[in-house]
Length: 167
Length: 405
Image (cartoon, rainbow over all chains, first blue to last red; front, top):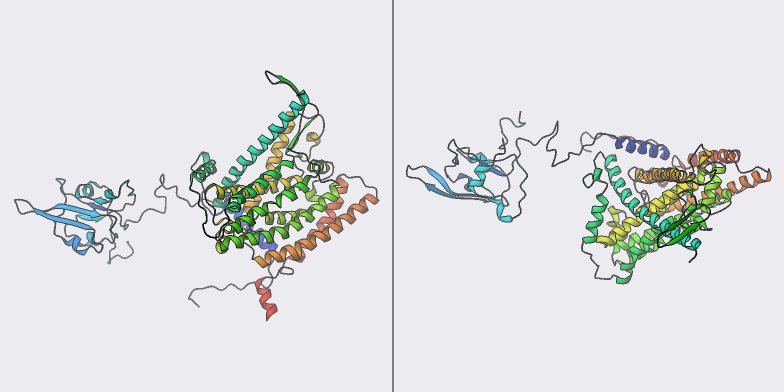
């Protein structure tokens, strides 16, 4: 038997009537208990519960002071992406700075593993603490660079091996 | 057309319209109540979006169901019966309420309307659609027709699970109908009449029959739960085993018809419990509601009381549903045939003997008469519940295993 299983011995004789009445008092009592339902669109968190900071949702590209994407088009994220959902075409300006010409993430293909954020040397691409992604059009799920930069939601803190419990 | 005939027709049509509408609106409210109450019992909130506190949820669902596509099973289904079955369970469920008196009578009237002429109605207007002299026998007859809808739905679907549900329901309803009828014989013995308004009048004169006929009430409640296919007797549906049984193949409004039928049957049974055992529209502890000439205020007050009584039972239906688990089929049959029917038969003998003795002693029907019956019933109920309890009559799995060993 599995560890920690508590075996309760059944009494030899059970009163059905008493059991039924006890059950009915229990269900009646629950009528007036505090409800656990969170009324979603209005309430998104409540005391004692909120979305984990380690939540990996749709992406966000961080920007520098001039509002340009921090991405240097090194190509590590499309390389590591297990779902192959990142499309990156690198470009280079006259000073030799590399930047992404095209940077697109197909959020439908994405498996939200967070490897892109982990691998990014510039801390540019992040998975976000965000989950409301409804669109009217399939095409809108391919996020381009402009859209990724425009996101404002908090970014995932990911899982830290040194601090496995997130303390 | 004479003024009397016109008055009669007006009253009849109005009563039918009001009761029909009230039942249909009531069904929607009860469905909403069931969903809210079940949610509350599970610490959830339930539907609370459509309208204030979600009361219009059933309207939204009804609208959705009317607009949804209807599907027909293609292989092995009987088209005609498949089409008829929802109506066959829907109509009897609505029909039964017509003999239930729901309030004190209204005063007659004599009015002259423009264009339509003079309408008169002499004497009190009884607040019942049809005050049939056969009373609850009519309800027994019509409510047993409801089983056809379920059986034919199961059979015509051409689906194994639906068929099993239909078979179960026919077996269940046939067996519990006997107990239901027998438990009402006791009411007949004491009230001396099957007409529901007379049963109400009798309870106003003595005591409510729940005291005079406690065992009968218990039997009636159990049988009524089984008749309406509600938990713990909802074996025709039994989601876990039968994918909802007889209405597996039904979609859109046809499915809704079964739903409405179930809930209106539930309401009728609750109304019957209130009428037969809880004094109907009688307001307790005051003779005000049954004496003197009829008035509108009295009708409204008694209607309110009836409404409350009925809804207590509707709530009990819901409450029981979310408390007691479903019976196994052999347990259901065991309870029906080995306990309910013999107990009901023995009970008839006891009640008949008591009534005969009391009449031989020359006692008039009144409070003391009722109290004597209550004493007899208290003893019987104690003995019955003691006998049934502690696995003495219904075998638990453990005891069965012990006996086999």
